[in-house]
Structures are given as C-alpha cells and as structure tokens.
Image 1 (cartoon, rainbow, N blue to C red):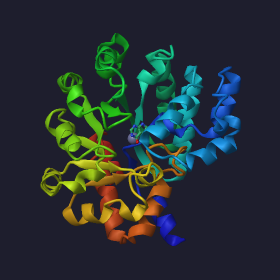
Image 2: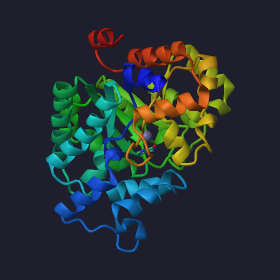
Image 3: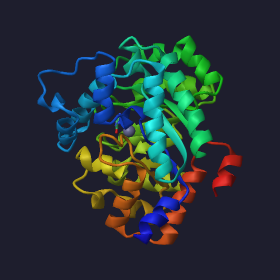
Image 4: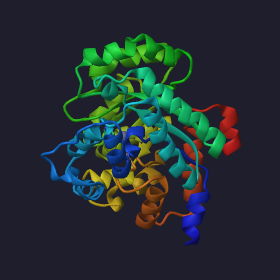
Length: 336
Ligand code: HPA
Ligand code: ZN
C-alpha cells in the first residue's frame, strides 16, 4: 500500500538490534555444516531450517528464546562468518530504508567458546564499512555485557586490552546490558558503567522488558544510562514515566519481539499510544529480526496497523530517532 512505501521511505534509525539475532535458520544450518558444529541431536527443532523456524513461533519467554539464540550463534567461527552475518542484516536494513543503525553484539558469548574479541570485531567492522559504501548506511557498534554471567567475568571483559583498545579507538561507541533480565538487577554492573562513563562511552541497558520498572529507574540512577532498551514496563510507574518524558530519555521499543516473547499478547498492548500522549521519546526496532519474524519495516507496519498513526506522528517518531542517535551532528543534519 502507499502507507507501506511512506514508512519504507522515512529516514529510519535503528537503535536496538543484536547482530547475532540476524542469523537466519538457513544460514545457521549452512554455517553449522561448513564449520563442523554439531547442533543438538535431542531437540527435534534442529531437524531442519523449517522445523527450527516453526519452533521460533512458540517461544514462551525471554529465556526460552535465549536458549536458541546462544545455540544459534555457536556456528559463528571466522571473521568472515561475522562479516557475512552483519551484511545479511545491513542488506535487509537497506531494503527497509534504514539510514543509520546502532547495533549490539555479545562478545562474551563468543569469547566463552574460544572465539577472540578481535575476530568478532574484525568481521563486524568490515561489514560496517561495506554497508556505508554499498548502501550509504552509517552505523555504530554497542558492546553488550551478558547479565546472566558472573559479574567478575563481565568486569574482566571490560578491562581486557583488546576491548579497551576498541573503546579508545572509536570502533565501539557504547556499551549495553542484555540477556536474562529478571534475576540480575542493574546495580550488579555499577562498576562497569562507571568505567564506561569515565572513558566517554555511550551507555544503554535492557530494562523493563520482563523485569520491573525499578530496573528502569535503577539503570538511570545507578548505571547513568542515556537510553533504555525496551522499557515497556515503564507504564507501571507514572512518576517515572513523567520524569523520562521530561528528561527526553529515549526508549528503544521492539514491538514484534514483545509479542513473540510474550511480554504482551499483541502489538496493540505495546504502550505506543501512552508514550506518544505522555511525550516519551522512543524508536521502533527489530531486536532479533531472524528470530522474531521481521526486520524494522515489519515492526513499523505492525505498529501502524495497531495504532493507525498519522503522517505527522510517524514523521516526529523518525525525527526523534535521528536526534536520539549517537552519530555526529553532521550526520544527523544529513538525515533530518
Ligand atoms: N533481551 C535480552 N537479551 C537479548 C535480547 C532481548 O530482547 N535479544 C538478544 N539478547
Ligand atoms: Zn534486545
């Protein structure tokens, strides 16, 4: 329809997608074969790409998804595997009309399997350069800490020489916090976030996806984050919602993810209208597009179907996305 092409052409900024979440079942099986990785024999979902994709429709929770997400990424071995993975994302992003993407990656999940940080970074950096050249898409990398791992493990990754080098030479722009939320409060990561602030890194954290709204306030107060990833449970605390609106803190909302992981029953339940009415800034994002049945434009379309937003509302959502991005002012001016 014409609205679909209007949404496609908007200068979209993506602030919440995990590069490992763009691994399709097709590519997963191809890489498993090429890299001699044995997929779980005892789970019938791993019979074929088709059975795996069908299993993704029946995720019961964030942890149920993460089980498949971590098995999936175990097929990634060489820097060119990481480059190909990221190019798969950037190709979809280009087709969907993404102008600028700030993408997460999960180095600890690879380091734990014996893949070096620099292997991952080399592959992703090559893809970023190609995406800019081939599609005109600018991007930033956000290094995530896995909150289900022991805190000392996270601290030692933060202090690792290669990781510090990537922070200081600008190849990584910011840090994030992801994986299982509920038993792992933000305060556990205070030391890492203080260190990141000291280095001048940008800071965000997943909060209020499955976890309570206090994880949102603690991420702001204790971790001093500049953005909140998901944040849909903000609606449980009206005073906090008013504060976030007043401060202009951005939420990176992921509607299809919220439905697939059963944080909400349907897209209509994502508090888009409440955020618009309260003046809370947010972007709309794909999270793990190969797992949740859609890239960014599918998320825009699903939101449009659920909320019937006006042209003016869509324009202001995209403008807020540009202004809330972590690129240079010159790049923002180009997109505006
Ligand atoms: N939440 C937490 N961790 C994640 C997610 C998510 O939506 N996607 C990939 N890792
Ligand atoms: Zn996420």
